[in-house]
Image (cartoon, rainbow, N blue to C red; front, top):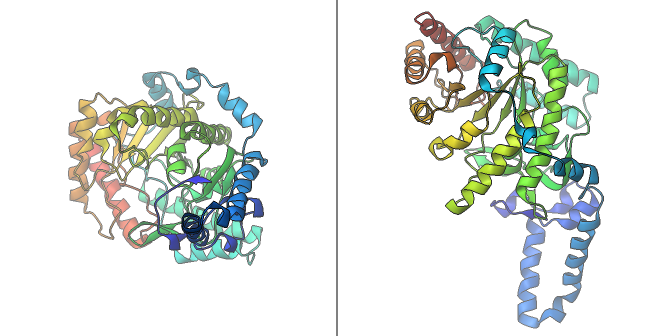
Length: 439
């Protein structure tokens, strides 16, 4: 029931072993054992004729019909909301007006410093989450543990002198699965592990129905972090393109239409974050370039709906709310126009290993909003020196208007250890202040 994502069959052994999936949903899906059975059915049918497999074909047809009529596959309220959308729903005030309002609200220094969102996920954090999921830890004890970790992360950032803080995301198992577990229309698995990169594995959600947000997704944790500091705290969301790129998606609705549904759920979350006093919201789209179709003829259509869905998720934000996005794993040259089209107030990108390769490309393309080219490569335990980071910040500030430059790591810090993270971020802040003093 989903558009295929290439993965080994051992990644999803048997749908019968998935306790989180309802029986109806199980009947619509084919995991490894079911796929092998389907191959055997085809082989038997080819060898002995359709009559030999008539019962199995009838079961398959019944499952397809069952899914089409099942509650939640088509939700009239969701369809009506997306059908009513107009181009104005993706527009914000001009950037110059937004930048002035945001600076008045946030009062940030030149070359402001921040991180991408996640902080190290220690074995203690993961064990706490696992115990809570198994029912071995009460909701109250789980909340207390997560709040203690958030308080520690906020205190560390203040000690380091970062300008825009994050809550560190200790409650999140994965940047897509976390959201899918809370959105209607998605299901998640227990055993469906898929290799992401290196030794890292994820469990892609299954998108089976229309998407909506039954309740706030992130507000509780972000608002708590903001209550602990006078500095701005970023709300952290995963964007619609990335949620779909890293899920098994439905095949009965165009991907762009589903992206709009996800975007509207995120738009509601942005509204609730603003109501909680959050003035900076980051909507990550690391898969923007990754999902670009192989066929060039399909590029314009994809870029049209992907940019539209991002803007739909963020355009409801107030003029004084600073919208960030983050892109990674990408050769950005092919999507420079799309990056500009996102209309984010600040875009952070991987750039440390390429020594700011994207910055002159953005300058040549006329990009004129905030840009945070990564100055700290988080993909290894190596700690960059102050001089090394200073060189990269200076290079960025020479290539583009320094009033637009932010200083941040390449990506999230989830996979790093605290000792190296603390030293690296301290060097990052020192480098930013060093270059700031020369402006």
